[in-house]
Amino acid sequence: MKNYRSAAIFDVDGTIVKGFIIVELPKHLANKGMFDKKISSGIENLFQKFILKKVNAKIVAQRMPILF
Image (cartoon, rainbow, N blue to C red; front, top):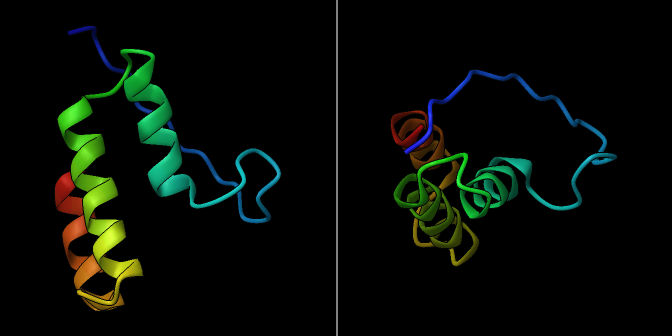
């Protein structure tokens, strides 16, 4: 595994990434070997549960920081 660096990315209007950057950016970085694939999968799974209404926004807000 490579050494990781911190970054803060703000894409409020979707000009950098179309879709949900909190899901898409980790997935892209994981595919490039720059982010842990297990963490990326966890993020994507939690988001899918939200889309399918299996968890609410409060649960996502509580769990997402733990995944990162």
